[in-house]
Image (cartoon, rainbow, N blue to C red; front, side):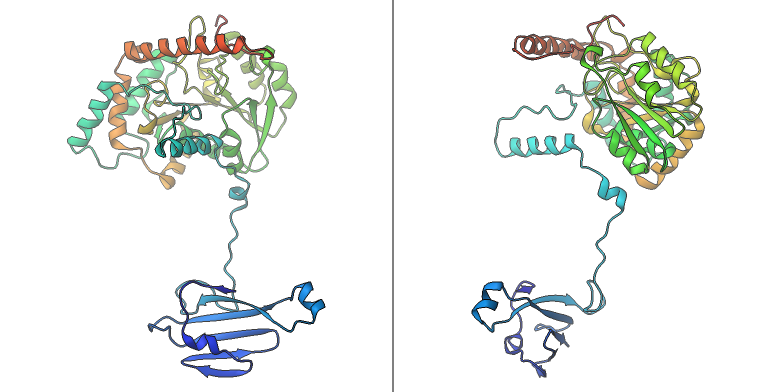
Length: 417
């Protein structure tokens, strides 16, 4: 067996036991191994070592008295440019945190579906949370204008001042939250915003509480930080919402971060105001405990349900990291634009991480983001039309599922908020 491809110089076909030179190749061997050191490759200039070792004979050969030897050879460069010498093996070890990391199941399924579509298979993609509507025309036109007018340079790491001011206005008008531009960090999607927030505040020995079902990337973000995920299963009869007594039971001195996603990915359930207030009362008793409020689905919500920002509750602004973005509300998944709103102390830490990872988000996307926020309250009529269609689809799917024997279903967003 020879660990290389292509034809070898003829001299290698005449290797003998002992020491000899064949056409520029010096071979040395013992009863256990054989080495070949080349002065030049057949075409010249490439030096290498050929290492060979005996492989133990198969049991059948031993019992049959066969005298044949199995030799395994590996061709490795010895010119110092790459690879390893016969006395040195390449270290292929990886960071233990990366080894422990799981690939995103969402992306694995989504990529599989895309590959099937590209091969001609008729597939309905239900993996990623991706609206199938077109990005609003005004948003597209803003992006095109930016590209055509040379707004294609690096932006400030935290995002353009224009966009951060627009986000501050949106948060004040729609969420009752007051932030300054230096408390906003624009990133390449809400996922990046989330993982940077986790990395900024979680450390080895910390615990992050994640109500289940959950967005599949939450535990992996925690793994990257070196902290430990504490999964808290919720119940169908509770609409898959975290109950205060469940939270109290898992909290301790190691508790550092609580994930709250409302409207929930993947269940669609929405926390009512009194439910959030009960959770806030518990959080307030634990000085180390912060909250990552994932509000990316805030506007895909159906009356009578209503969205409430956790950071707007009394005493929660100081300890809440609010994540939001443009992908869901404005059908801008491919534009890759999200943001983190947080007290400056935490924001600066996340900003530092981003500066060493990706730097600022796409300049064209940021200009488009400004246009999206200018569509009106909650996205105006354009987004309202999308939400109406989403609700019709939800109602149709619920009706079909409820008609199936043995199916128990928590219908998202049917109770008053």
